[in-house]
Image (cartoon, rainbow, N blue to C red; front, top):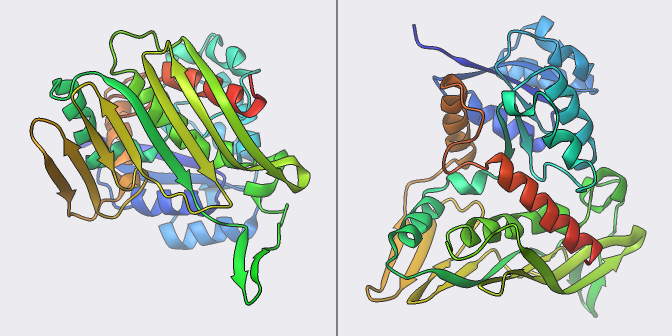
Length: 343
């Protein structure tokens, strides 16, 4: 009989709902239990995904105590990740946590040095890595066709604050109750969107074999703030030993797009929409100039679930390619922390 990986979800916001819809379509994975403080959300998940009443928990601890689960997906607001990652590790639970895994580097040593940490699977939900356009980009870079990557520019941003009226630009209502604008919930553009740009920068830097990716500096940081000291636009340079430099930009105030351009010794790769395109497209300029389109509609959550479920079935403690390994979670957390704190 085929083994089914049994998933539980803590936190039932929009991302968790889209994740659960994708999970529900797999034959190697099944949603078994959920936990939320909201009775309305619990009922919605129960009815939508045909869950048993005994597997609906209004206490996150009860879900962690469910021995019938193979892996927990933590989809809570950013500021709650650390607490529930730690409790999950103490219960020896396999964990996928929504990005960013941590809002600060100050506590990650406690996680990574925990006696149970190497005994569990632990990964971070950067679903864009599972899109065929990213997998093909990595394949081309690894082939050596373009030489080593030496520089890139990567953007992730959109205008969520300003709108045009008859007289010009006026500011939209800045609602600090929304998670992305709430510092207490781990809001701010660097944590919410900038983490994508640092993540892909680290992934590409890792392909340059002449550098030690642990040796990085964050330079030329330019950050704009609004009410409640929330960062709403930021640009920086991530410098790996002066051998690979990534210019990153992220925004809640400007439509800067989602493109990434990777410059190599003998050419470049341009990714039109780096994060979650329905149809992906990359442009390669080198000895062979070409454009690749990925016309099949891709559900990156579904691809992520399939890969991770296979990892769990194979008793892996690290995410296999193209997933995010523990070491890169640690490093990306350090990069984001330095970027936010300007050091």
